[in-house]
Length: 82
Image (cartoon, rainbow, N blue to C red; front, side):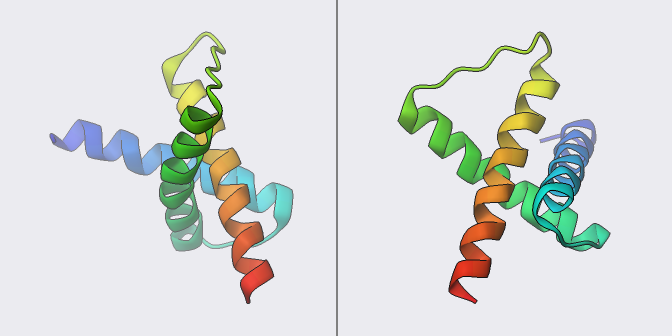
């Protein structure tokens, strides 16, 4: 994995985490990154398991939306368990 791919991955995680915190609360750049990256895995799993394929016209936008939905799920589960 090259540096560009890692930076894109981090940017998608931060944006997705910010969107999730905007929807369900929370804050902080590290929290955005963690929830966004974990949310990307969870969202990817949920969308593949459900057979849902979104196409919003841009691959990065698709990834951000999937990661944000996954991050919301992660935050809600964490709040339920905590």
